[in-house]
Amino acid sequence: MAPWLIDAPRDLIRDTVTYLIDVPPLPYGNSSYLWFLLHRHVTLPTWVTTGALLLALGGAAWVARQRHTGLPRILYAAAAVLLVANLVNKRAFFNQYWMVAALVVIALAATPERGPEPDTERDWESAVPGAV
Image (tube, rainbow, N blue to C red; front, side):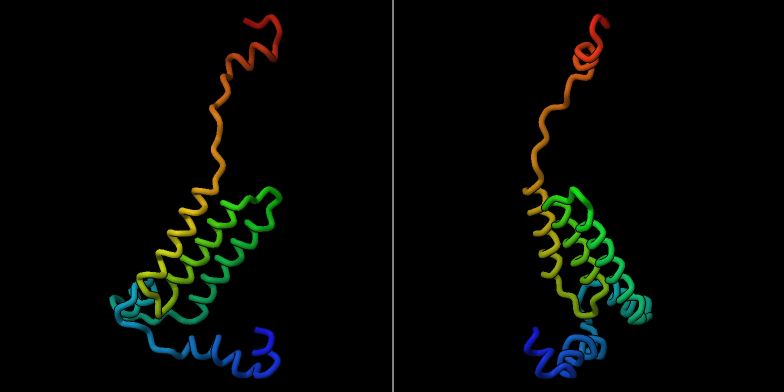
């Protein structure tokens, strides 16, 4: 991206921001943006869709900054950001939701198994000598 930014910053802004705002929505996509447009005849303003995405990104950044954030939590946060991006996208396709599902499945697979729950009665007896 750096060569693009250095060589043609105006093209970078046009291709990554302006074009996506001006492009017409897909009539057969499946997102909340298109639902509002096709079923309620309301075009969501850019600040609503951008705000939703920025809130999701902020939440993911907050999760990533936590002290004991493991890989599964990072993957869940990435899935949440991708889900929100798909829901507010006016050109979302059905297959984009599979990427969200794949991140959730990978996060589930990366979650460490928990051992058996400790026997609280036995732990209490060992912690307090003579307590029975």
